[in-house]
Image 1 (cartoon, rainbow, N blue to C red):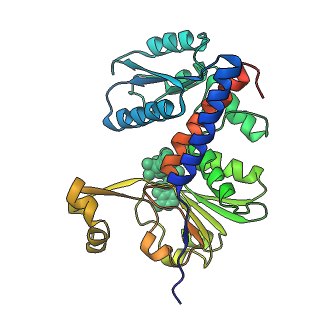
Image 2: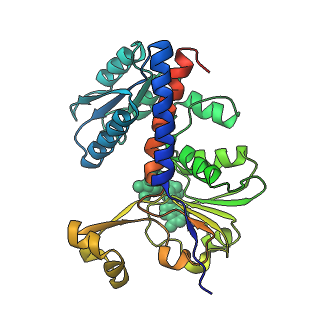
Image 3: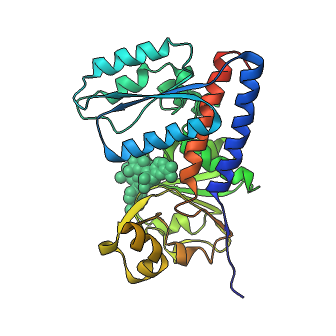
Length: 307
Ligand code: NDP
């Protein structure tokens, strides 16, 4: 009998979350006259950053937030960004602030991230928020890791007591998701580029989370029968780089766009072994935006003293 894993649809779950946020925003407006506001600073003209910022703005519109993008020249010095942040920190109509990464080289990223009021730091990158995450205090948590935990919970996947392997230890995904999982009482193994034998660590995982940006890193023989697999990676594969199997599987994408998006997991091989798997696209990606909106609502509620 061929077994098929249950697809964890980030598209569906994120829509549920956005609907819930929309209702809360309506209620907040009605009872307090307040509309949550998000301000995004975009320095330079990185094409991928422009796409991300646009989808964040679109998400804000969908749920009824006020949103704005502050565009700064690619040669802007750190001081100019700090001045802008000071202004935003003090604005009453702005409850969430984020600086789109990556920043141009001349900008001191640490200084910039530390200049955002932790209460308005909806990306959760401020050292105060990271410290609070470690010490399990109420705080704003990075959106992608939060989205991963939310996906697991909404699919009723038990985390407590499970062996979880996280591949990738970035500050944006790997490290914070590992802390969140530990806070949920999982036994967490974290792998990175110096991990000697990746398979030893992935094969025992009840839940496997992969965030490396390396396509086909996780092969079928590296995953346990019945494992839950969350693929965070986003890899754009153009037609000239695709193998025959991918060309056939994603035929429409290649015909319409000349490229397709895949994750870090060899989906066609891993899916038959997994109990649950998140697809790319349509998995973690849409969850990230939904959790950024959720963080903005949370920040607004905290600032105005709502539960
Ligand atoms: P980074 O490049 O910051 O981190 C990648 C991590 O993977 C590093 O810790 C790196 O280790 C590790 N790594 C790389 N190659 C291997 C390997 N062969 N074996 C084990 N570990 C390895 O990326 P991010 O964490 O920011 O993003 C990871 C992926 O997730 C990317 O594809 C990104 O596009 C995607 N992403 C998706 C999001 C979404 O919303 N779906 C949001 C954020 C990211 P080391 O540091 O030691 O080199």
